Length: 154
Image: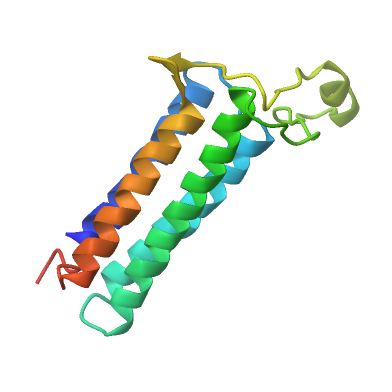
């Protein structure tokens, strides 16, 4: 069960981020990108754990996936704090793809600010949801691994 959660949570969060980006036109800021990288690592570690589920290293890979998910959640907490104005964020901003004329793309690209939440539900931004879901997932995965329920398939 731990393996299933360690795989499905980052896949779900990445899918949500990509849907927001490509279907709803919400380009990611620098901190949004930073939250995605640990989820990619978590997906890779969980897939490798799935492939090696009968080996002793499978459990270590599940724990690594959980720690990567937690890393993304902590970055999400920092990002949410920046969006809510609790502390100052990064000075870097990001923009979308460069296309065939990089200079024109850079000059015309909208800046994506890290301190403005482009979407929120009940006052919680996407970064806030990433924090809540990721940290809860880490706790569940680590508890399940501690109880020896880290396998999903025979």
